Length: 176
Image (cartoon, rainbow, N blue to C red; front, side, top):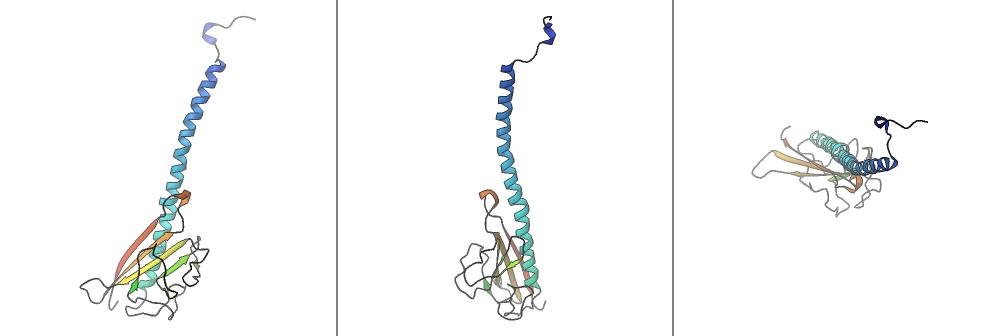
């Protein structure tokens, strides 16, 4: 055997261990960024988009009611002519508000796939994922005008992060 030439020297085991240690350290740092980006994408992307979509769905359902309707129940689909509050003044735009009466007709719940979930009195159903609340009010100093505000939130944010919530407000005029 002949001795290796000076330009053909190999890598020592110590150099490989040091390089591997640096690579593992860098990868561990990057993995925490991946976790943050996945959580942000899920909460800001998917869940926030769904809450906005479901707020818009409720607004469209309420806007389809007659201005003086005070009995339609929009907590079911399709809406029924009785058992609800229609566009009667009331409700809340605070999705964290506690339901205090069994006749609360300004809230409904959706399952994770977006299907309506049946409410059971003041207790939210166990299978809810999205909560929609709405408020009907007459803006100060106006006549023949109602403001509809819908707020939608989720039961829990992805990865323990904050819960995305969307708000949508529209005006409905009489006679339209």
